[in-house]
Length: 318
Image 1 (cartoon, helix red, strand yellow):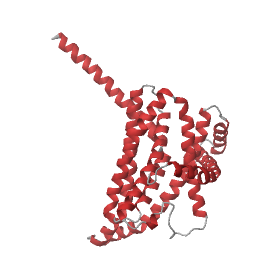
Image 2: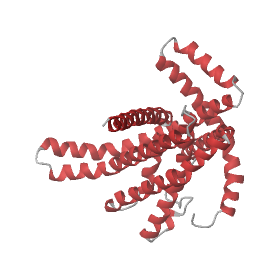
Image 3: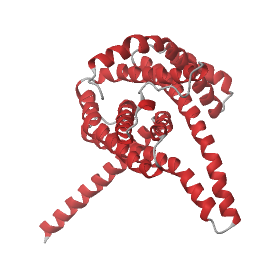
Image 4: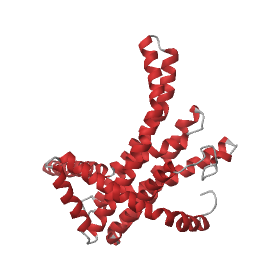
């Protein structure tokens, strides 16, 4: 009997440790997830563009295919790579963050330049999507493009998350990264699903609503959605630049150059007047400007050097 009681006591102790570990993983995942907020905004803002031109009945299946590809990106490729980096080459994390931050700056600056330049909205896009007549082929191309973009953003998310996990235990890191990956995927693509179907919900309410208020609300939703999508595009572009700039500034500080980060902090404190929100706003604004300038520098490099090399070494269709 005493042996049984001792065994139960040991099991209870193990359960307490496991519960504490679960709490630690949840807290670490929440902390890591908060650091990736800017990238998540961009991810949610970018994805709806891949659904333009498709029948409403295909929107949710396409979102599911992209979400499934996102989970594979994170769990099969990026999670093991992140753990290997943490164990054998932690010094590579800041340079990789700089590389990812540079990509965000490049994408954000390119979007702004594209809007400012004169262009023909009816001409074929860079992916040739306007010339594709087969809807099935177009869907395949769009899904591939979305998953490719998701891979880059997911790599940034996982690297940022890894950089803020305090524990050096590989199992703790793995569990936290897995939880962050699942939470991020569910949050982003759940939000995208709601966004792209809201106009259909509004149209349905405007047609079958039993009261005038319901029908008016439906028409209001239909009119509001284009504005919401435009706002998401603007916010997503701004997030790319301020997050990209912030990542680069913080990463170069981790590599030993603290000057930019200290200067931005001192400026934020001086202009913020003790207000946490104002200090954040000043910091984000400076990061945005730095990100935009760096993105402008990278545009000719990306367009004239990186893209041709990528197209040359990448099999067609990937």
